[in-house]
Image (cartoon, rainbow, N blue to C red):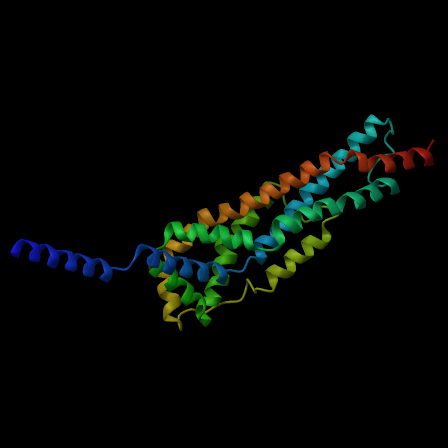
Length: 260
């Protein structure tokens, strides 16, 4: 009887101990909630603005390669170039194909938040994610987030494309996208001096974990999320142009009819 009683007592204690521990599902839910708040706090507009320019330029350069190739195959001669009205009309007809890729692949910004949520989840626990999300909701934290997104992320992504000539402010046909990028960038006042010394949370974020860890993570994995998405969209836009020869044919015929 004593053995049976002892067994029952041990079983009750074991159940009580398990009940006292936080369930894995509850802990996961808390982390998911904190990660979601952190991801939602980020502004995707600068990566999107950079992506618009890169993808539009990749698509339009591919369109011009297509026009040159189709014109050469049609034997149009040197007069078939960007100064010809039919060439310009063909470019205008091809541009919406590129813009559709930009709208579908970049514009909404969910891809960035989802990607950065995965990055944050791999680097932070629930408490750390909650601390940063809470910090970013404060006055000093919002200002600090802007700096991180512009200096750590935005400038690095911009350099990645400008130094490799995949973003050229002089590319014709992308003036609207370049203007939008400049408007988005300067609206965040990149040259304004921000004094974080009056925000203890900001000083802690800049000098201690989890802030330092998160900033380093964004500087590597977070940037990779952006460049991978933009590169995929640019490749898709270029491929769409390569497969659009049928759209070019009427303009080639119009040019030939005008210049027999």
